[in-house]
Image 1 (cartoon, rainbow, N blue to C red):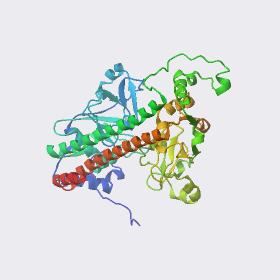
Image 2 (tube, one colour):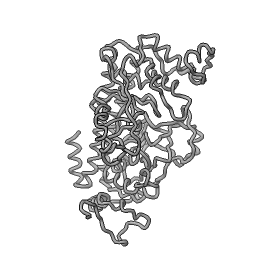
Image 3 (tube, rainbow, N blue to C red):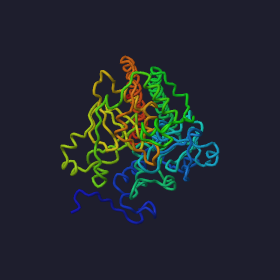
Image 4 (cartoon, one colour):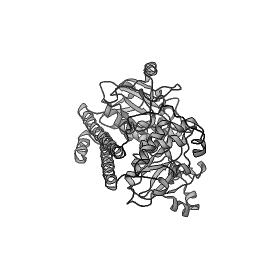
Length: 474
């Protein structure tokens, strides 16, 4: 009757503490994880024993502003790096001083402790001099016994993540409390090995900076071609419109729609060769099966807006049940995006574009449109994707979808988005820069993966084998 089920027996006296008695806490994978750590030749210490501070970010209703002190959200914290392209806001200097407890400085380790982005860790780099963070992010200040980069990689490894996940099992979504973080066991490697891990992570960081710089160079080339200066902001100027030139033409009476910045962007586009998006791509929609068809453990991957940004597609935390797939097999086959499709969000974080380099084994939510280029001799896929993610289109999205709490960009409006068409050889030049930038991104991620695996090898086998592994992979 119990065949195939996982059973681990414990006496009451063998329980680790008096407040965690859920069966999931004592799952076999979690128990084995702890046993390997304790049996390793490396010293084990609790996180509280090797840190001078474990706290988290602001729990209040934070007031954001256009510029100021960087304020990290959990979306920014990735495995081994902080991504300033997503999940960032700004707060005033005065509020930053008030939120002294959650102020970040270079060398601090940050860890996502709740929600979709749970269990990811990175080190605050030297180029982030002043920053603050939210309640969903833990701030860990290591003492001299442990290297920040090594600690972060340990937390990202299976030995760190499994402990976090073990304590983060909750009914609705994962969450680990600060008091639970204190008991996380950390393997302490030699200073030499810790510094080697730091070297690999910093090399990955440098390559990532090169990736971002190359992508920005592609954007600059686009702007230069149409004579657009994205540094010259004039969005706060008064714009006077007659009823005939406003509502009669656009059907909009909200003042935000007629900001000068929107007109300025469109003027630069239409003064050059251009076309509307509907003439350049086929636009199709996916479906929204409903949460009753979701499965978190097994099924066909179901991609939502939170699962991608302009630089990457993440493994989704939701799948569609196989029973639903079987019942709708022909529809599912039709909805699977293929290589060359541009995923484009119309709800929430509107206007985010991502170009698929391979067929996608999964389907997307109805909030993500599929754009397929009609003629690649007129517009290059990489070029169009960059344009869609640039300020040239983002301002059009902001204008059309503004004025509501949850942003929604109607398909009819998206079809009318104005796209600059620069000379074809310039498109190819821009596309080459984009491709080169993405290759650098992959190399940066590869190095971080090597660092994480090396930490695991040092625990399971030895530091000597871990060092040999690094040398063989670099």
